[in-house]
Amino acid sequence: MKKIALLGSTGSIGRQVLEIVDRYPEKYKIVSMSAGSNASLFEAQLNKYKPSIATFSCAEKVHEIKEVPTETTLYYGENSLIHAVTPECDVVFDAVMGYAGLNAVKHAIALKKPVALANKETLVAGGGLIMPMASNAGVDIIPVDSEHSAIWQSLEFGKRKDFKKIIITASGGAFRNTPINDLNSVTAEDALKHPNWQMGAKITIDCATMVNKGFEVIEAMWLFSAKRSDIEVVIHPESVIHSMVEYSDGAVISQMGTPSMLVPISLALSYPERLETGAKPLSFKNTSLTFKELDLNRYPCFALCDKAISLGGVYPCAFSAADEEAVKLFLQNKITYPDIYRLIESALEKNQNAPLSFESLELTDKLARATVLDEYRRIKC
Ligand code: NDP
Ligand code: MG
Image (cartoon, rainbow, N blue to C red; front, side, top):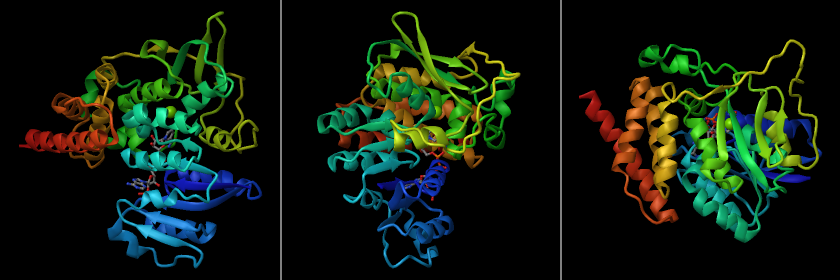
């Protein structure tokens, strides 16, 4: 029986983790769970899974959770999340959205708990601290993001390091066929219509801007000790090939499947064993797979992310924090789509590099968010 600490249980990934747990009650048990602000769903989950520990970040809404099982201790408030990283668990599944997930990973490593990592912002902001910490502690960071799961599988669960190139595929997001001139007037509602994947709102917007792929490049650099020049991104609108690895002899190994997060989620919990997940099987009848180059005129945020990568240090952290705030404003229909780029750019311009430490990440995160809000007020005047 694998005991799981599930962080972000009310989200798109969190709910799919629970689907897998429901499918294999003899293999998995939820010992702790955490949510941000969705009180009604969290209450229902608590009463179904009865974890020993529960955490809820939004202190203002905690009173909406009326019934807590007697076996559950509930912590709440902004800093409550790390209580869910409990010594009782065998694996921490981090499916929180955003920078909030990073401290939990740090804590899991300190407790020597393996981490199934969906929360990509942890590695984008703090990969330079988290990966050495994990490796020194002998703690596995298991990829959940579909591309990184595909790369991990193509590298024989990370046993091989002798790759020549990593090729990350990208669907192209909601605006892959939108005339570039029309991108000035697209709305959040348009951007949320992802052609292939059902995901949380923030990552769906990040797919439209291609910030998500920039993040995935950074994730791959940290997870597989790759240089930026070892990684190529290619548009693959069908999302059948989830990513690939090219070896020195010219062989290219890929992992394919219908677009379903159930597969990488399940594998992160069961590997090297593979379990039935309920994902729709892939059919090769009347299927064509196509690929094209990423157009930086369509996706300027990808180039901006590359700039943050080349600046290094705390710049990717500033980029990620600025993106979180800009996407929040866009989802509230307060800024235009091109403003996302402008706001992130302003945060990178204001950012000052500093030696990497958890304290400098904290300061960078705060400064980048404040810069985005200042810049937003300025452009609205
Ligand atoms: P969602 O927005 O659907 O869910 C996010 C989860 O995190 C929710 O449970 C939310 O709680 C919780 N949360 C948000 N803020 C906090 C906080 N401050 N403290 C504690 N919990 C918090 O996102 P997704 O499930 O789509 O994505 C989760 C992560 O996985 C992201 O990093 C994303 O990039 C990554 N990912 C997602 C994929 C997908 O298919 N969805 C694919 C690959 C990676 P609540 O809802 O209660 O507020
Ligand atoms: Mg992905």
